[in-house]
Image (cartoon, rainbow, N blue to C red; front, side, top):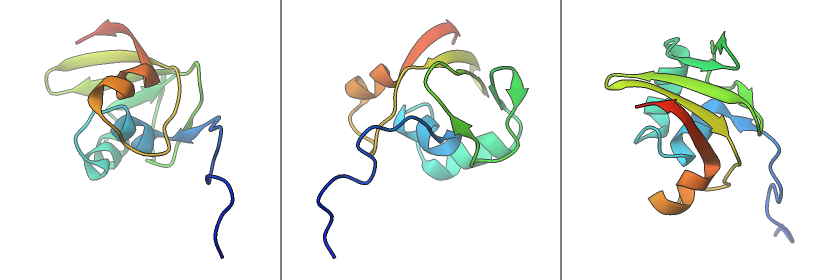
Amino acid sequence: MGRTAPDVPALNGQRIDKWLWHARIVRTREAAASLAMSGHVRVNGQRVKAASRIVRAGDVVTVALGRGVRILKVAGFAERRGPAEPSRSLFEELQGN
């Protein structure tokens, strides 16, 4: 039946592919999953081997993109992908780009 509350009112972790997509690091979730599985993403210095890898607030995500490397600190999560401006609050850019 119907839900009385959102699925996850306060997320404390999220799949890396969903997080990369919600944070607008990549354009599609499929691209995020491919990026994660290709070995171009690291979480806290460890190479990600699966798109299902969970990231938590405070984790440092290193992403090697065609145009450079971005080092991001996970600051939060979103239940849905939204506009670009609020998406920037999901991470803190440490270096790169």
